[in-house]
Length: 150
Ligand code: TYD
Image (cartoon, rainbow, N blue to C red; front, side):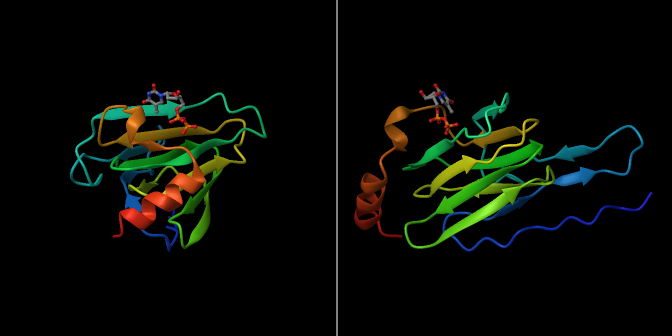
């Protein structure tokens, strides 16, 4: 079987990057994709959540940034559009490969849209859920960036 070539996107926004996974995709019985905390995933994983049932074509998710939380987002099935915004640079990525994730570091606004009906999104997070870590207002996000310069 020919080994599939995986294309990794180039990420231009701050506090992000591609997280490459280990994979075995040459089995006749399906693919295996592996990431280990603190090794492939750049933090110890404390929380996992996934998003499915994305049949609503005009659904929008995300639209927030985090103050401290580190996350890595995957599209394990189907596809969606991930829009990243570090306050200066914006970038849209079509997420359609289960073989890599995208780091959603702190102070990075993100939006998810254009989901295929079979899309399944998996997110690994560095901490437990805390609403006080969210910035859900874009003007507040810009203000936060001014106070917390990198
Ligand atoms: P939110 O993070 O805004 O979802 P998304 O970015 O996917 O659009 O969360 C939606 C709701 O779910 C919000 O009320 C908070 C709640 N929630 C939890 O209680 N625990 C969690 O781990 C997450 C991710 C969300």
